[in-house]
Image (cartoon, rainbow, N blue to C red):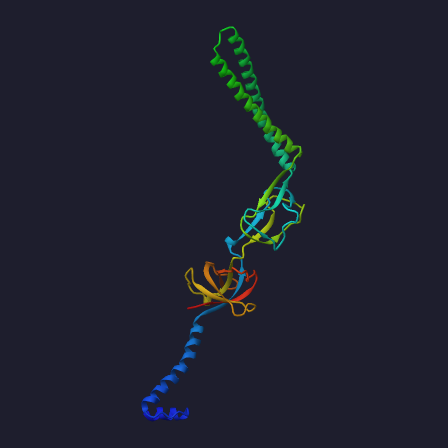
Length: 295
Protein backbone atom coordinates (compact mmCIF):
# COMPACT_ATOMS: atom_id res chain seq x y z
CA UNK A 1 0.00 0.00 0.00
CA UNK A 2 2.78 2.41 0.89
CA UNK A 3 4.58 1.62 -2.34
CA UNK A 4 1.37 2.31 -4.38
CA UNK A 5 0.81 5.67 -2.69
CA UNK A 6 4.44 6.56 -3.27
CA UNK A 7 4.21 5.67 -6.96
CA UNK A 8 1.00 7.78 -7.28
CA UNK A 9 2.64 10.76 -5.65
CA UNK A 10 5.67 10.42 -7.89
CA UNK A 11 3.42 10.30 -10.95
CA UNK A 12 1.96 13.67 -9.86
CA UNK A 13 5.47 15.17 -9.59
CA UNK A 14 5.01 15.44 -5.84
CA UNK A 15 7.53 13.81 -3.55
CA UNK A 16 6.39 13.88 0.08
CA UNK A 17 8.92 13.39 2.77
CA UNK A 18 7.09 10.55 4.48
CA UNK A 19 4.11 8.20 4.15
CA UNK A 20 1.77 10.48 6.15
CA UNK A 21 2.15 13.35 3.67
CA UNK A 22 1.58 10.94 0.81
CA UNK A 23 -1.69 9.69 2.37
CA UNK A 24 -2.92 13.29 2.82
CA UNK A 25 -2.17 14.06 -0.82
CA UNK A 26 -4.09 10.98 -1.97
CA UNK A 27 -7.14 11.91 0.14
CA UNK A 28 -7.18 15.40 -1.39
CA UNK A 29 -6.93 13.95 -4.89
CA UNK A 30 -9.77 11.50 -4.19
CA UNK A 31 -12.00 14.34 -2.93
CA UNK A 32 -11.36 16.40 -6.05
CA UNK A 33 -12.29 13.47 -8.26
CA UNK A 34 -15.52 12.59 -6.42
CA UNK A 35 -17.02 16.12 -6.08
CA UNK A 36 -17.84 16.57 -9.81
CA UNK A 37 -19.29 13.07 -9.88
CA UNK A 38 -21.55 13.83 -6.89
CA UNK A 39 -22.75 17.08 -8.46
CA UNK A 40 -23.59 15.34 -11.72
CA UNK A 41 -25.52 12.65 -9.85
CA UNK A 42 -27.52 15.32 -7.98
CA UNK A 43 -28.43 17.00 -11.25
CA UNK A 44 -29.42 13.68 -12.70
CA UNK A 45 -31.80 13.09 -9.81
CA UNK A 46 -33.59 16.44 -10.27
CA UNK A 47 -36.52 16.64 -12.70
CA UNK A 48 -36.35 19.05 -15.64
CA UNK A 49 -39.08 19.98 -18.09
CA UNK A 50 -40.24 22.91 -20.20
CA UNK A 51 -42.81 25.38 -18.89
CA UNK A 52 -44.93 28.15 -20.37
CA UNK A 53 -45.96 31.37 -18.64
CA UNK A 54 -49.75 31.48 -18.23
CA UNK A 55 -52.22 33.50 -16.19
CA UNK A 56 -53.47 32.24 -12.84
CA UNK A 57 -57.21 31.83 -12.18
CA UNK A 58 -57.18 34.52 -9.48
CA UNK A 59 -55.04 36.97 -11.46
CA UNK A 60 -57.29 37.43 -14.49
CA UNK A 61 -60.86 38.54 -15.05
CA UNK A 62 -63.22 38.78 -17.99
CA UNK A 63 -65.93 41.39 -18.46
CA UNK A 64 -69.11 40.41 -20.28
CA UNK A 65 -71.97 42.53 -21.51
CA UNK A 66 -74.99 42.18 -19.17
CA UNK A 67 -77.45 43.12 -21.92
CA UNK A 68 -77.73 43.86 -25.60
CA UNK A 69 -76.63 47.39 -26.29
CA UNK A 70 -74.13 49.85 -27.71
CA UNK A 71 -70.63 50.21 -26.26
CA UNK A 72 -69.54 53.68 -25.16
CA UNK A 73 -66.15 54.67 -23.75
CA UNK A 74 -66.22 56.20 -20.25
CA UNK A 75 -63.34 58.50 -21.21
CA UNK A 76 -62.19 60.43 -24.28
CA UNK A 77 -59.74 57.73 -25.42
CA UNK A 78 -61.16 54.20 -25.19
CA UNK A 79 -59.32 51.52 -23.24
CA UNK A 80 -57.34 49.17 -25.45
CA UNK A 81 -54.83 46.32 -25.14
CA UNK A 82 -51.90 47.23 -22.91
CA UNK A 83 -53.70 49.94 -20.91
CA UNK A 84 -53.50 49.81 -17.12
CA UNK A 85 -56.67 49.85 -15.04
CA UNK A 86 -57.44 49.95 -11.34
CA UNK A 87 -60.05 47.89 -9.54
CA UNK A 88 -63.35 49.76 -9.69
CA UNK A 89 -62.45 51.91 -12.70
CA UNK A 90 -65.26 51.99 -15.31
CA UNK A 91 -63.84 50.57 -18.54
CA UNK A 92 -66.92 50.58 -20.78
CA UNK A 93 -70.55 51.73 -20.73
CA UNK A 94 -73.36 49.66 -22.21
CA UNK A 95 -76.22 51.74 -23.61
CA UNK A 96 -79.08 49.30 -23.38
CA UNK A 97 -81.94 49.62 -25.85
CA UNK A 98 -84.82 47.19 -25.60
CA UNK A 99 -85.27 44.90 -28.57
CA UNK A 100 -88.59 43.43 -29.69
CA UNK A 101 -88.30 40.42 -27.40
CA UNK A 102 -87.71 42.67 -24.40
CA UNK A 103 -90.58 44.93 -25.41
CA UNK A 104 -92.96 41.97 -25.68
CA UNK A 105 -91.88 40.76 -22.26
CA UNK A 106 -92.39 44.19 -20.72
CA UNK A 107 -95.75 44.54 -22.46
CA UNK A 108 -96.94 41.35 -20.80
CA UNK A 109 -95.80 42.63 -17.42
CA UNK A 110 -97.57 45.91 -18.05
CA UNK A 111 -101.00 44.37 -17.49
CA UNK A 112 -100.11 43.39 -13.94
CA UNK A 113 -98.77 46.87 -13.28
CA UNK A 114 -101.87 48.44 -14.81
CA UNK A 115 -104.08 46.39 -12.48
CA UNK A 116 -102.08 47.65 -9.48
CA UNK A 117 -102.39 51.20 -10.80
CA UNK A 118 -106.17 50.96 -11.10
CA UNK A 119 -106.52 49.39 -7.63
CA UNK A 120 -104.41 52.08 -5.95
CA UNK A 121 -106.23 54.80 -7.83
CA UNK A 122 -109.58 53.46 -6.62
CA UNK A 123 -108.33 53.29 -3.01
CA UNK A 124 -106.99 56.82 -3.27
CA UNK A 125 -110.36 58.03 -4.54
CA UNK A 126 -112.21 56.26 -1.72
CA UNK A 127 -109.83 57.81 0.84
CA UNK A 128 -110.47 61.28 -0.62
CA UNK A 129 -114.23 60.81 -0.42
CA UNK A 130 -113.95 59.59 3.19
CA UNK A 131 -111.85 62.63 4.14
CA UNK A 132 -114.33 65.10 2.52
CA UNK A 133 -117.25 63.37 4.29
CA UNK A 134 -115.40 63.62 7.59
CA UNK A 135 -114.85 67.35 7.14
CA UNK A 136 -118.60 67.87 6.68
CA UNK A 137 -119.40 65.74 9.72
CA UNK A 138 -116.88 67.64 11.80
CA UNK A 139 -118.50 70.93 10.78
CA UNK A 140 -121.80 69.52 12.05
CA UNK A 141 -120.17 68.39 15.29
CA UNK A 142 -120.58 64.69 14.55
CA UNK A 143 -116.85 63.89 14.16
CA UNK A 144 -113.87 64.66 16.34
CA UNK A 145 -110.68 66.31 15.14
CA UNK A 146 -108.65 63.20 15.91
CA UNK A 147 -110.88 61.11 13.69
CA UNK A 148 -110.49 63.61 10.88
CA UNK A 149 -106.71 63.51 11.17
CA UNK A 150 -106.84 59.74 10.88
CA UNK A 151 -108.85 60.02 7.65
CA UNK A 152 -106.35 62.55 6.24
CA UNK A 153 -103.41 60.19 7.02
CA UNK A 154 -105.17 57.33 5.24
CA UNK A 155 -105.72 59.56 2.21
CA UNK A 156 -102.02 60.51 2.10
CA UNK A 157 -100.97 56.84 2.26
CA UNK A 158 -103.37 55.85 -0.50
CA UNK A 159 -102.23 58.77 -2.65
CA UNK A 160 -98.58 57.79 -2.20
CA UNK A 161 -99.29 54.20 -3.28
CA UNK A 162 -101.08 55.47 -6.36
CA UNK A 163 -98.20 57.78 -7.32
CA UNK A 164 -95.73 54.92 -6.89
CA UNK A 165 -97.74 52.66 -9.20
CA UNK A 166 -98.15 55.44 -11.76
CA UNK A 167 -94.39 56.12 -11.80
CA UNK A 168 -93.61 52.45 -12.28
CA UNK A 169 -95.92 51.99 -15.22
CA UNK A 170 -94.62 55.24 -16.70
CA UNK A 171 -91.10 53.81 -16.64
CA UNK A 172 -92.33 50.68 -18.39
CA UNK A 173 -94.05 52.71 -21.10
CA UNK A 174 -90.91 54.78 -21.57
CA UNK A 175 -88.76 51.67 -22.01
CA UNK A 176 -91.17 50.11 -24.48
CA UNK A 177 -91.22 53.34 -26.47
CA UNK A 178 -87.38 53.43 -26.46
CA UNK A 179 -87.48 57.05 -25.36
CA UNK A 180 -84.46 57.08 -23.03
CA UNK A 181 -82.05 54.12 -23.18
CA UNK A 182 -80.43 52.87 -19.98
CA UNK A 183 -76.66 53.33 -19.58
CA UNK A 184 -74.77 50.90 -17.35
CA UNK A 185 -71.05 51.41 -16.61
CA UNK A 186 -68.96 48.24 -16.20
CA UNK A 187 -65.99 48.42 -13.81
CA UNK A 188 -62.75 46.46 -13.70
CA UNK A 189 -62.91 43.78 -10.98
CA UNK A 190 -59.12 43.72 -10.46
CA UNK A 191 -55.99 45.83 -10.84
CA UNK A 192 -54.15 44.90 -13.99
CA UNK A 193 -53.55 45.31 -17.68
CA UNK A 194 -56.00 44.86 -20.52
CA UNK A 195 -54.89 41.75 -22.40
CA UNK A 196 -57.83 41.45 -24.78
CA UNK A 197 -60.40 43.85 -26.19
CA UNK A 198 -62.94 42.06 -28.35
CA UNK A 199 -64.98 44.99 -29.67
CA UNK A 200 -64.80 48.45 -31.23
CA UNK A 201 -66.34 51.57 -29.80
CA UNK A 202 -70.03 52.19 -30.59
CA UNK A 203 -70.37 48.55 -31.59
CA UNK A 204 -73.65 46.85 -30.73
CA UNK A 205 -73.03 43.72 -28.69
CA UNK A 206 -75.33 41.00 -27.45
CA UNK A 207 -75.94 39.90 -23.89
CA UNK A 208 -73.09 37.65 -22.68
CA UNK A 209 -70.58 39.00 -25.21
CA UNK A 210 -67.01 39.08 -23.83
CA UNK A 211 -65.75 42.65 -23.90
CA UNK A 212 -62.42 42.66 -22.03
CA UNK A 213 -59.95 40.30 -20.44
CA UNK A 214 -57.83 41.91 -17.71
CA UNK A 215 -54.74 40.27 -16.22
CA UNK A 216 -52.54 41.05 -13.24
CA UNK A 217 -48.86 40.33 -13.95
CA UNK A 218 -47.67 40.67 -10.35
CA UNK A 219 -48.27 36.91 -10.01
CA UNK A 220 -48.10 34.56 -12.99
CA UNK A 221 -48.23 30.84 -13.51
CA UNK A 222 -45.78 28.54 -15.27
CA UNK A 223 -47.54 25.52 -16.74
CA UNK A 224 -45.49 22.42 -17.47
CA UNK A 225 -46.49 19.08 -18.91
CA UNK A 226 -44.66 16.16 -17.32
CA UNK A 227 -44.37 12.79 -18.99
CA UNK A 228 -46.19 10.15 -17.00
CA UNK A 229 -43.00 8.14 -16.46
CA UNK A 230 -41.28 11.21 -14.95
CA UNK A 231 -44.19 12.28 -12.79
CA UNK A 232 -43.79 12.11 -9.03
CA UNK A 233 -46.24 12.82 -6.24
CA UNK A 234 -44.83 16.23 -5.41
CA UNK A 235 -46.64 17.87 -2.46
CA UNK A 236 -48.34 21.22 -2.91
CA UNK A 237 -45.90 24.00 -2.19
CA UNK A 238 -42.92 22.22 -3.76
CA UNK A 239 -40.50 24.84 -5.08
CA UNK A 240 -38.81 24.85 -8.46
CA UNK A 241 -36.14 26.95 -10.12
CA UNK A 242 -37.27 28.43 -13.44
CA UNK A 243 -34.88 29.90 -16.02
CA UNK A 244 -35.51 31.68 -19.31
CA UNK A 245 -33.02 31.98 -22.16
CA UNK A 246 -33.96 35.60 -22.84
CA UNK A 247 -33.38 36.49 -19.16
CA UNK A 248 -29.85 35.16 -18.59
CA UNK A 249 -28.62 34.99 -15.03
CA UNK A 250 -32.12 35.21 -13.53
CA UNK A 251 -33.67 32.31 -11.66
CA UNK A 252 -37.33 32.59 -10.68
CA UNK A 253 -38.76 30.54 -7.83
CA UNK A 254 -42.06 28.82 -8.47
CA UNK A 255 -44.37 27.19 -5.94
CA UNK A 256 -46.41 24.19 -7.02
CA UNK A 257 -50.08 25.15 -6.82
CA UNK A 258 -52.08 23.01 -9.26
CA UNK A 259 -51.67 19.38 -10.33
CA UNK A 260 -53.94 18.16 -13.08
CA UNK A 261 -55.51 14.99 -11.66
CA UNK A 262 -56.02 13.21 -15.00
CA UNK A 263 -53.42 12.09 -17.51
CA UNK A 264 -53.78 13.38 -21.06
CA UNK A 265 -54.63 10.25 -23.03
CA UNK A 266 -53.02 11.52 -26.23
CA UNK A 267 -49.72 12.84 -24.88
CA UNK A 268 -49.56 10.73 -21.70
CA UNK A 269 -48.62 13.83 -19.69
CA UNK A 270 -49.91 15.62 -16.60
CA UNK A 271 -49.97 19.37 -16.23
CA UNK A 272 -48.40 21.18 -13.28
CA UNK A 273 -48.80 24.89 -12.60
CA UNK A 274 -46.32 26.82 -10.47
CA UNK A 275 -47.10 30.24 -9.00
CA UNK A 276 -44.27 32.69 -9.65
CA UNK A 277 -43.84 36.16 -8.18
CA UNK A 278 -43.30 38.69 -10.97
CA UNK A 279 -42.99 42.14 -9.31
CA UNK A 280 -40.95 43.66 -12.15
CA UNK A 281 -43.27 42.10 -14.76
CA UNK A 282 -40.35 40.62 -16.67
CA UNK A 283 -42.35 37.49 -17.39
CA UNK A 284 -44.97 37.79 -20.10
CA UNK A 285 -47.59 35.30 -21.14
CA UNK A 286 -46.36 32.76 -23.66
CA UNK A 287 -42.68 32.82 -22.63
CA UNK A 288 -41.02 29.38 -22.55
CA UNK A 289 -38.59 28.46 -19.79
CA UNK A 290 -37.00 25.44 -18.14
CA UNK A 291 -38.38 24.20 -14.83
CA UNK A 292 -36.14 22.26 -12.47
CA UNK A 293 -37.61 20.54 -9.45
CA UNK A 294 -35.03 19.46 -6.87
CA UNK A 295 -35.29 15.88 -5.51
